[in-house]
Amino acid sequence: MKQLDRPVLFDETAFAARKDEIAAYVAGPAEEWARRIERERHVPAALWEDLRARGYLSLAAPAEYGGAAIPFTRYLELIELFSMSHASIRMIVHVVNGTWRAMDRFATGEQRRAFVIPSVQGAIKIAFTLTEPTAGTGADLRCSVERDGDTYFLSGEKHLITFGTICDYWLLFARLAGTRGADGTVALLVDRHAPGATVVEMEESMGVRGTDHARLSFERTPVPVKNRLGHEGAGLDVALGGFLVPSRISVAMSCVGLARRGHELAIEYARRRETFGKRLAQRQAIRFMIAENATDIEAARRLVLHAARQWEADSPEAPMLSSMSKLQAVEMLTRVTDKALQIHGGIGFWQPSAIERVYRDARAQRFEEGTNEIQKTVIARALLENSESNA
Image 1: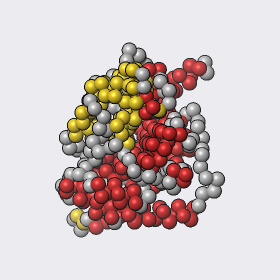
Image 2 (image 1 turned 90 degrees about the vertical axis):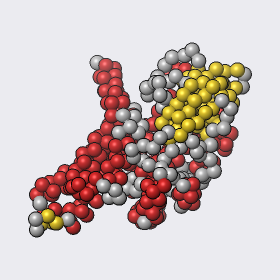
Image 3 (image 1 turned 90 degrees about the horizontal axis):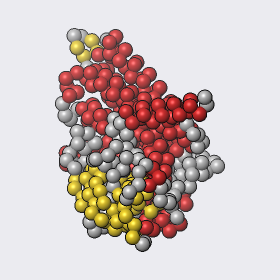
């Protein structure tokens, strides 16, 4: 299923109703979940079921898989709303609505029935498993596999794996032993309970509280060859083109949504807080901060949507634009949340102030789907390689 495989007609009325429904959910039930997550430091299984039952985990998938078949650019409008809620809620919606796409582009019919469709329908959980503690991003993979007949034997380590302790399968990226570069990479669906796999839950993070992250180690863990997506050497194609490019765009829109939440909180506080006989909203310094934040958010939103449209059109510039949108949106989020907290003054620094949670969660976006430095590397490489080919 490619990104251009979408309904010829799109029901705008139904979409508007869905958007209103999600906005109401974010403002109401999601805030109840948020308070529980912050209190218990854990995402309850009931939240997953709530999101599944409401259809929020299958918004972007094709109708024949049980999804709502919402086109990617329109789905981003919904991600913006979910991102105004607790970061763990946004994380669940974002990941489940994205991993199916990475698998589907390379899946056989049997794999589609065993993994893709059950993931869309919420019957199984799949964790994207790329990051390693002893390597960088992409082709610098140290996890390796040795093939013996119809089985791969997996060895190595992974860390920072979202949903890594509660998933049913890891969508894991490794390399054939003895190879270097992208050509030796493979994408495998590894059973969470496979022998030789050790799972350790990581300590609590500064933000995105409640979402589990795992450290994984493998000692000749057997993985059936039939669980490989695509051919040997296609591992990074599955990871980067199938997941990371649209996921970076989605994370960029998540930054827009979280910044919007911080911005709205700041406006609300400025309107009611009074100092020296004046509302904060009457003071020029505060008004300038609000104007700058609104402009920053809107500019980032437009770049994100441009990147999304280019990805939908299979543009060769889509990978570069996805990194541009992530870089710009993260930098914007940093500026906006800093000013929003400043508008709140010292009281915003204390729990349970809503801006305190927004500020903590914002910092995590600087790492998700690659640091700013990784995004700059992708952008510069694309620009410089393009200039060389046109010389």
